[in-house]
Length: 618
Image (cartoon, rainbow, N blue to C red; front, side, top):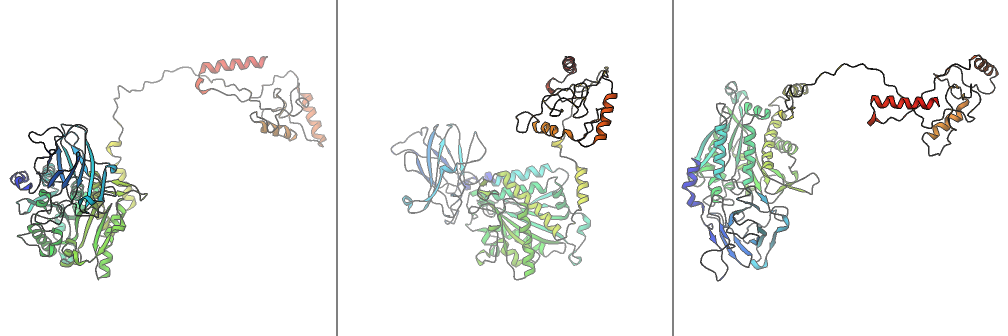
């Protein structure tokens, strides 16, 4: 149905737009040559009213105003073809109506081509926004570009377009994908002035037992209303809405809890005519639909009139209660995402109204609290948030959620990260998570205990992407190790110039060995004084100095040299030394060795041990 409607009204979509206009240099006529640019905006969401060649490579471009309203000129979307390879041009958009924007703060036009269908932003160094004396003091957006492929058709746009046909295709896909498990229902709420569908999605899996309650028992079903694309040029809002819909109809546990306890009413495109025509802000009649909610008529704004009837019906129901009305918008003058709310004379209602924005700020890293505003401005009386707070019940919280067309600040507060489609989808998912936290905060939903959350995490396990790959048992089978005779590998020690002897190096021992630590250590070099470059010099010096201290060695058979003044102890030591036979074989004391781990094999150990034994025999 959506595709046929678009085809029937295709001729209406090019109202005032250029249609395959070839710009030739002065004095040339006939068949266009390569390099004579061809401009086209006679397609869905297209907007370009006029193009003029003002220099050899410079073009002045004029945006088409909204239908029946010449005030708004900001959105542009057009194509260029018949280019020459490596042709450089300078485009000047000379009639932008809004001077306060983000063109000097990171926002740049988008471009894609037939061979590169992904949208890319132009480099900031190629984009300029300034007041031009050559154009009667008007603000001009100038950007340079280099066409690198002759066969491509290049498309330029203010933001990533989200057309009416794309929405219809997306709704058809998710409707066919849900199968027998109906997680949402889709219906046509009303037809627009140009006979396009205004779809209403109802995401509802509330059980039958909950529907048997009524308002008197204060156990009614809570309803959340989401509106999007009231202004036709705010394509990023549609990406946010798509991210929210995908999350709610998906398999995430949070989405399942929300579907089973609440009802979502989503209107993904309130102004389909304005979107199709490529208007900046207005509908077909040239009316700003976010300023006419209080005076909407079924003849001039049938979309608003039908949505108002749905809101009134839900608000007067004994089964349902509207908790939220959230209007999604895109902002071209501020970075990040933020919320506009209302002010109330009732202090308790106002404090309750502040809860949701604060929770959303904790969930969204790109949220900027400085841009959040709560007011009761009379100029915004016709907006949906002002209409809902005045005409509906006191339980309704109406907000406007704004997301930037450019990007958001990172943690340092200076660097700007530009949004892409995934970034906008993340804003929609954060909105759903905040709704769950809000209802837990006001005790509508129980807060899970820490133990339950841990058990649920253990039960759920790790994601499938983290599981180890399945391996073939036959291919990677570990064969048993053959049984071999094992013996202890001999470990040898080598000298590291660590001296165990006293300063005298001689007397006091038996058989010409020192009596420093038992008298059975081989002869060692002299101790090394502190400050020497040899390893462990201070340790050896300390041992030499403290040789007179009676340390008992586990390898010694006698006692160490007694201290001076102990005559009986000296006599006992001399008696033990005299009684000891000279020919008793005494094993050498183990000493430290450096072993190369890279050559640590059984054969090398035996070879090393044999070399040490030979040295000892010498």
